[in-house]
Length: 194
Length: 325
Image (cartoon, rainbow over all chains, first blue to last red; front, side, top):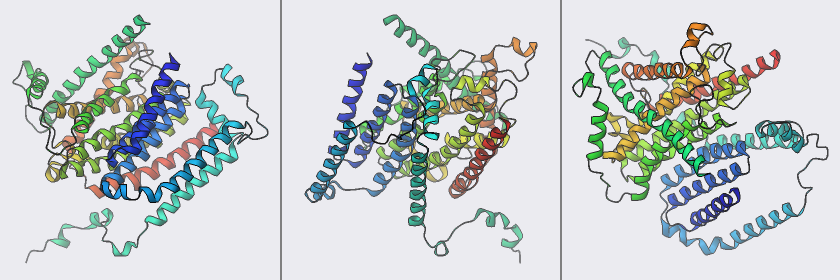
């Protein structure tokens, strides 16, 4: 049963990711991308990784894809402009594809990548003891993979600060309403009877 | 196998039918409550005390013509109200109404609800975009920005509750409140959570997406008949869901207020229903009392007040829990 479901949902993932690339309307592309994320969450569910599935939906579908959709709707990209650059960017895309595929091969051919030397937690022992995988994930992240976890946290912080710096403009040039100042205004300051 | 599936479908129907009746009578309740607050009578013509009013409204909506605007994206236009309504029902799969009275008692229940409610934005933003109308699009953009902003503080508040309960399972969160409801130690967060749910469900005083004075009706301007009806039902379904979530997280779910024999006589689902109804009454009370927020006030309230406060509260909660351990 689970195998058939897996094939069904992975078929949907492949189809919708093709449609992300080939659909003419950019908004449709984003909607198909959301559908792809959603189906990947279901694949996680089939593998009993319920925490990862929910995080995928909350983070990617609930937050990131909404911002994508926002940007794409606001930009109003015309189709002809999109098609123009295809040949120009194609070699670059090809290089990216080659890099990704070779990375995938590297990861699948070796068992040693990204695993710290002294793992203290045995995953099968813990699942036999009845830990649910949320707890296991937490234990892993805060013990054996602590450094990697911290580094990725700092990367996110860096990205956030970078985004704030990029978005910051000179506030003195913008007319801003401060609700505190507005509350301070009294009736007799504005309305005068002569 | 087949028997199991029919059994599950039967259980789903047992959840959905009472919920639909609850939603229908919530609209009646709203009109009665607001009528009483404004010293009017409210609906009192159709049936005794106007009790058949929601059914009459439903028939009226069903028999009207569904209009698709020209140049609208037909599929997405029809799909978004269905999505909104389906998502409002979907979360009820994990809500425990009483001890063991829940469709599926999954380990990550609270994350499931949070994930489903974060999908609710899509129904609105797709409706606004596919209508091909300025008013609808502006309403949808406002609504999406508002829901994302307040979802952040809701998520952080949920984290501080999870830390106290030590579980992601909704039934276990309720059972961990046997000694005291979390509304007592987490009282500031209870207030912020309630205000955030008002914003999350696009209710007054945060009903900017459908501010009729500026945007006609926001994202659902172009909708008519049952497509509009589904948005309407979805909104009220979300109100009930958010009240149920507040009940579970802060008001002890199905648990009676005091653990004595008299209170224990009343079954748990009645307590649950009472608490949810009380919160819904506050929803309507707020709507009848407060004027609408301005958009920049809404944003600064969410990002500059609620977000830092709830973040600060997580730190306080975890420090206290660490020292109590």
